[in-house]
Length: 124
Image (cartoon, rainbow, N blue to C red; front, top):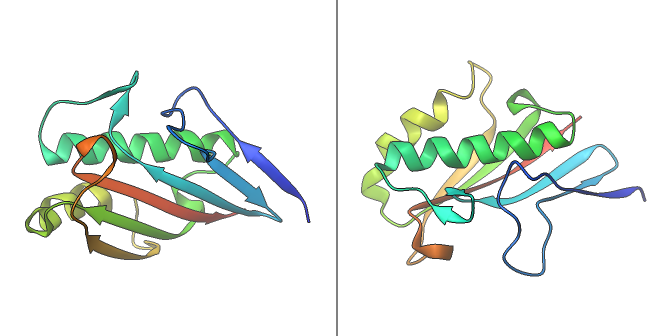
């Protein structure tokens, strides 16, 4: 099995015993990304936070020579499902008609007390 650790300085460094992404036989498993820039949670609206999360995902994808079109599935974790529509609007702007599969789950708390975290699986 070919297993490659993917890292980039353009996305938040892991805050625990995990990697930003692992590439295995052409499939990229990207760890959950949150709205951290330079180690700090961004200030702003849920839309601002979601854009930051998506840009961090994009940076990890780019480090693996992929982009949003390679994503097969996303998992979205939110602190307040009442923000679903606002998050969904931003999230959807990163995909065309061929959006990936996904689930959205409300959780009680996320790392660094952010409001949204997104992970994905991408295929070469």
